[in-house]
Length: 452
Ligand code: MN
Ligand code: MN
Image (cartoon, protein in one colour):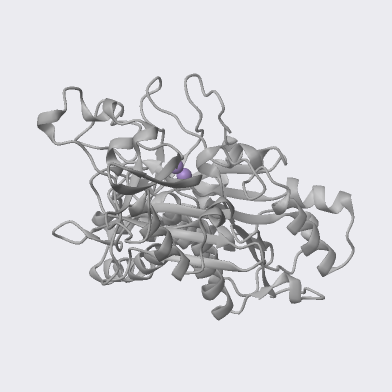
């Protein structure tokens, strides 16, 4: 525990870890939004033999099944031979990430430039989103029921968009304090339309949108997310790390999927949970607070045999869970909020956070030591590199995950995930060996036969 992974890695194992991260980089490059993450996950799951629950009449041991909620949350399961009342092995992560969303009536003209007004989503440092190439991802829903999918700014010959910033000479205050949410407006064009009488630049952009089948009012029924443009890449002269957008929390989602795909005929049913809205408090129909997870488990029980409410309750309370979310890695550039003795380090493997919350553990889901002892045995028996972590100094740090929401079912749950540098920044940094160790930990967790 709490050791540098490289001390024990052979060249062959390091190669495996780095190879694993090639698939990961492709996944996060293609899955910048929740909907894109679901599309990519369905592709991977179907090629691993998973079937949509809507097309299934009966489930038996060894079957692989998935359910989707509103294209933004998902449950995947491999059915075990054991009675479902004895509980599930669950790894759950979130697939939403901080970004800028378009406002409901976003398009306007100012200073002879056409602009898109945004409302940021999740905790961001606003200045980080200016003066950097941005792409536009999402869907526009038409009144006739059709949907237009948008992904612009990612291909070589696409243009990118962006938010301007002042030159240093014109700025008196510090940058971090000077940008407000209302100043995060995306510049989308400069060319005036020849036919228009006023707002000529906006009129030209509206013509461009019209060619894609989009009217201005359609933007009211759209879900468009502004994200950093470009691919996830290797980071460091030694290529030991990954830099990419949305690693919180797809750096946990991807290993949890890959680990689930290893499970063939388990005793306990194994579940991978991907949810939305964690970054804004797990609210809404697609967040962890929604009934989707519980309803899907009820469906699974019904499809495997006799459903009863009592069986569902027993199933949930007897489940064991890893709340699979990222933690802050020690940052030598900004050491002030960290305690080096108790916080996570990049390169020390999967990080277990006994409790999140902040300032006197407020809001924490405090994991039981009995459960942690079992996990230690699983991790040590499988030679997993892991570290115990807090989220910064006692009165400086903190954070929340979906753990406390699952804990309300009276199940054992602990946070376990990858340490991240520059968390919530447009480009986040992780260590490849940590991603691989997280995958190995989830694999060992899924395979463990907890006693009810
Ligand atoms: Mn997270
Ligand atoms: Mn987050």
